[in-house]
Image (cartoon, rainbow, N blue to C red; front, side, top):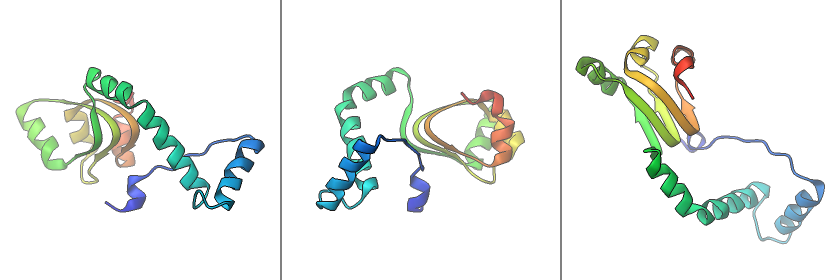
Length: 131
């Protein structure tokens, strides 16, 4: 998976004083750029809340990380007469060759905290099942 596919772009609004302080730290060489500072700050906060995040993931029975659903996996589920509840904290991807009909037949619900990637047609078909 390409590096660009492993990240999600976000936009935040910061106060001018906070932004100036970040710029000063960048200028002084503590960070390569604003993004480096923000990533470091976010990772520090996530590490700080690590035990809480882990307990919540376990309680909600979510997959932590990257989860990819292939056409073959979904066809096997359809053959078995089973449906999938997608619960991911991270990135959930449905392969591009999965049809909307196959997705509807095999995916009961989708709950993703992070990013959910699927074709526009599959996302449209699952619209009512995505939380």
